[in-house]
Image (cartoon, rainbow, N blue to C red):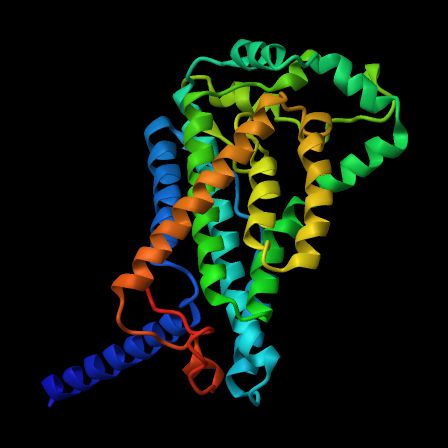
Length: 348
């Protein structure tokens, strides 16, 4: 009797797990497995690096409201009548879950990898700027003397978060699932590459050259938190539990990575692409004037973004050729019939 009860309980539990996993597979069909693996690798490197060096990572921001909104929207789309909203919302929301989780993992990984304390390369990057014919201090003073230009660059620089979200939203609404998969994978590749390069070639950034009191308009709000960088490079246990997460990456600039990756991913949406080109021209300059980066940093960011995007395209192209099964993206979850071949996407 007891054995039968146990077997029935196990059967129900397994069935429930299968249903949950099936639901997650349908919802996350837009996220390539390669991107998931990179996200998990970033988190693993953060945990291993923190454990090995006695580092307590910064606390995770409160995401309860975000998760609650996801559950509510998922339930709505599950029972709503078929529409653009019920089709696009789950794709967008679960893409955002991936982007948020991977970005947090990347931020923690950047803290853990800076514990390697490789030699700072500020002299190298400063010499590269000079080789390019750029006088960093003269350039930022030039921008500082033009308040309208400085304000526009500040706003362009602050648009990074919106630009990370934009491809997920627009490509979900337009149901360009293959392009969205490439974007998510290229974002993961670029973030991973940026953290690895910054760990091997760390720098305190050009902001160490300046005193804020020298400027009227520029405040270098995106500057590297030098106190965090210095403490991470010291030996011994270190507790960052009550500290906010700051950007520790100098070269390549991740702002520039996003500023190049977003228009690349949305180049087929022409009106948006043209606007992005204008905004991102300002963002690239803003990495120097508001982020306190060397001029070579955004150049490196552009290169990382382009190479990551091309690599993601190649990986996704091989996946499509090798997979004979084409599934509708989240069709069962959204109560849809299978879309046309142009909107379908193979599960990785």
